[in-house]
Image (cartoon, rainbow, N blue to C red; front, top):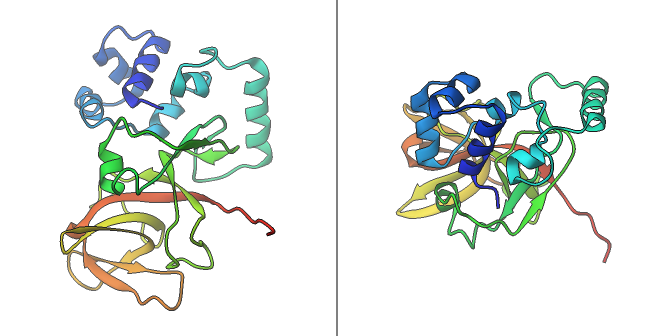
Length: 231
């Protein structure tokens, strides 16, 4: 299990920081931001990984292996990046992404709030952008782009007011009549004030405007995995 407080502890060790203030300076953030991460059990993985290019990310995430990257791992990472350059995402070559069962964690809100949530497995794929976790797709609202049983890998959004990129695909938890409704949708701008428009890929599902205040948890979908089997 990946514990984010432990990641900060290992980063503190690797950066030779003797205090939280030193670690905040190393990361280029305010001490209050670091304190907020600790209290919420959260991290900005993009920022952390950008400071750790010389570190073995498996060690940083789990404490296993050597602290420093092996020379051949460093060279392999450089060669892949040069061969397949991407413009927007910071790729992480040694991620170990936890796969969660939403039913077992009682929904997306509980999953994001539970720093001790236990994954059912881990996913390791080369050259992914930084991800916080992965869950199974349920329902057909994004069919045929996504189908029930696929896996989506996500990055949690903490700032719902300014952290939304219009037109992108999101994992969304909304409060509907007191119940948690979890879905995957494109988020578009709405003509209604203080609302967003949820748009499906499946043409049989109509777009729906909801107040942004109804959204209780939000994560940007970074990648998806599909199994094709012959029965």
